[in-house]
Amino acid sequence: MDKVHVLDHPLLQHKLSILRDQNTGVKDFREVVSEIATLMCYEATRDLPLQDVVVQTPIAKAVTKQISGKKLAIVPILRAGLGMVDGIHTLIPSAKVGHIGLFRDPETLEPVKYYCKMPNDISEREVIILDPMLATGGSASAAITFIKEYGVTHIKLMNILAAPEGIARVQKDHPDVDIYVAAVDEGLNDRCYIVPGLGDAGDRIFGTK
Ligand code: PRP
Ligand code: URA
Image (cartoon, rainbow, N blue to C red):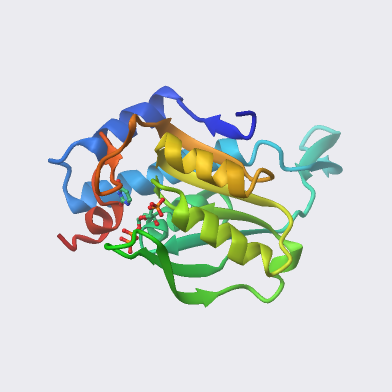
């Protein structure tokens, strides 16, 4: 489990509680998803390499630290992952964005790819995949496989809510990938929704139900 990071900061738990509430409307849901993404980004980028730089303060020269120019890309899994993009850009405005369109076939529950567009230099970047929900893990595992085909070697997965089944699936298929989640729930219901979960994240972000 050392690749699984459960970020249970009180602010994250509080905001997740708002997402879980079925009475939270679309506007608030979208805003809170974005805020959670910002808070999770802070933790998920803890290992970014630093380099020494010299700056002149109003008083004296100081040797300080700055991020050493490591290139990042974020890849939201459409649709629901889009809800996390602005929150990441709040902290890393220069992160390029690739998109992968996947939906779960409602019958087979297998991920179906319908769109993909990556930055040209994606193979040189560390990639953070964004999706609020990790249920069976099928979508996340397929997205990681796909991004690896571009030659990307450093991949992190950021989900707001996970089921143990989804974590196990990603760890089995991609043991090299660090997984960042705000909570791990009990499991899945017979339609492979996370229990207790928060419902259909895409529908709640975009108001489609
Ligand atoms: C949801 C969610 C994940 C996927 C998780 O997307 O945003 O992408 O399901 O399920 P899995 O772990 O079992 O693959 P959905 O297919 O509902 O598409 P949407 O984002 O367009 O609503
Ligand atoms: N996708 C969602 O949006 N919610 C779930 O609980 C499972 C998959």
